[in-house]
Length: 525
Image 1 (cartoon, rainbow, N blue to C red):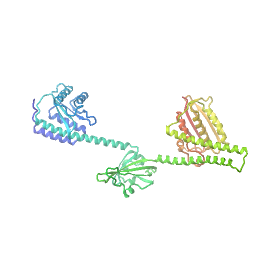
Image 2: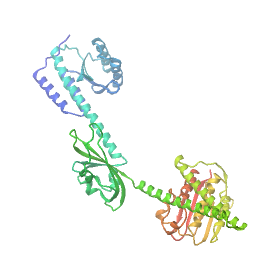
Image 3: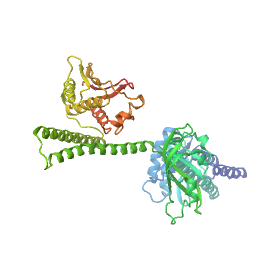
């Protein structure tokens, strides 16, 4: 065998210099580049590659190369897979040489010799360093000792770079979670100064990150109302308390109304979690901030709804019980007219109870099924509208009803029972919210693509700010008229769900004091 030229002092100095350089770097790609360059230079090679072992499946794959065409990498990876797959130990000398010769042929016909050095750290195989030369030369034990020393240094550098890469990936992952979390995140130091926030924090609190960071948390989170003590008070009272070793530290929750810098009030809930060091001392507090304004509104609406429904149920039940008790009195006799009138009231109030219960069940079903099931058939909205007017005329003597449907009004595909429910609700609302009487116009128009049904009244009207919200579940317009008017806040919610199930839209146009026009449009197809 031929012998490598002896390494002179300057080559040993180069080895020491490059070893220091690669161990000082943390970027894996840069470390691999330096290791490969130094290896090729030291053995006077022309071509080199570094293959790293995957921790997931143990497969070796080329991660850095020099003097190799990029289209050669895939077949080289295939040979590396054959070399190590299914083997518990390093391949024997002859098999390894045969595979290296095959890889040399893939790279270039002129390559005559290959030198392979394992990259191992703490008995853990990290990868393989291979240098190819265009000539044969003898490699002495001294040469191999120096090369292996370099390979060991290279393995340390690769291991450190891989650790750094994993830590950096984890840091980026945590940063992405922090930045794109739907909840606001705030990190405090042990002195309760803010050291980091995310974008959701900015949106919830109204504070920009560069304004909030470095500030004491009390200067940023100013409470208009708080339901219990804040974090600083909780710390004075012993938070966080020592728990059993290995157990998760306790958290502290506070909620209330936050006063933003723009004078808006937002309801928030904050969960504080302490971060402890090995001595059990707090180094940071991690705060998760959630905007609970919608939850609070829903809770308030639900409370109003429960109160309203209780009242709505109590009234017909009281009337039914009163009339029934009156008819059942043993000390009185009633003529048939009184009996008939009493039974009529009982029947009407029972129908009212049934309607209320049906609305509640329908609303619950819509929430559970995310929609309304329909029984489709040919439907004439002008016929439904005229029928609804005839029924509602008996409920009022102050209103004049006008039918205004375009001639030759077409039939559409729809659920007649559900659409009648919508129309009855719109006309009933028109009566209730125009207590001084006036005209109620029920009509419709159509085009080649859709039909539109509307109900117009001359009542109190609806403020513009509330015209979208009136279709929300349980929502009722504020005002004296609304408080005096019976209702659960479910009618328009159900109407919108039914119209949306028909692939249509429903809306209102109104000017306070000048009445309102509710209308819905449904496709003809």
